[in-house]
Length: 211
Image 1: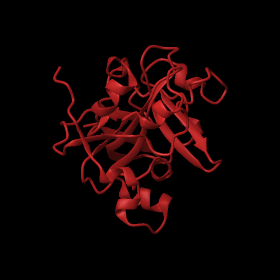
Image 2: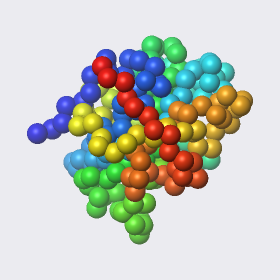
Image 3: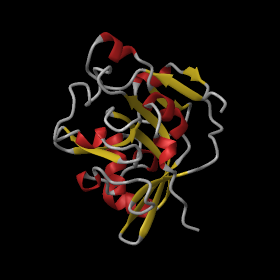
Image 4: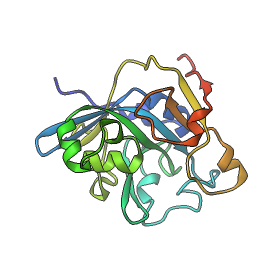
């Protein structure tokens, strides 16, 4: 059966609340009649005007306008003029909140991912934000895409992860001291598909509050 997309209500909350809940969920990419699937294993939360590390810190621009749209849409941007990054828009419309998908555990369509990524080890197919976008054929054409339609690109539900969840500082961000220190990167401990980072050596345990 075709996995159903997560409802918009799932995304309509603060990025720091949504981000850890994304771990273990499936990212679905429909491409040329194939379904590519990855399990989300690492994310980063970004708020709006209060977060100096966020693209939304200084307000809307032509580049980040999708970030201020309704929750449940994609915000795709280009970094260093080379790598695309996929973000999930969250919170109320106009807030400019989003969660960056940093790494996936590839589950289906690995032959297509390898064709996109070249001769790399399986663990290197999707263990970084630029890598996963290249592997899944995600680019600026999907900026503003509605993830709740269940076509092209969407997220599907999955059982909660069995691995412990770690929280720590975000990777490679700029901004004030508060932005650099905030523990808004969440990842699955010891998962081999988490992006390589010196911050992985220290795992601060994080528990998702019971609903």
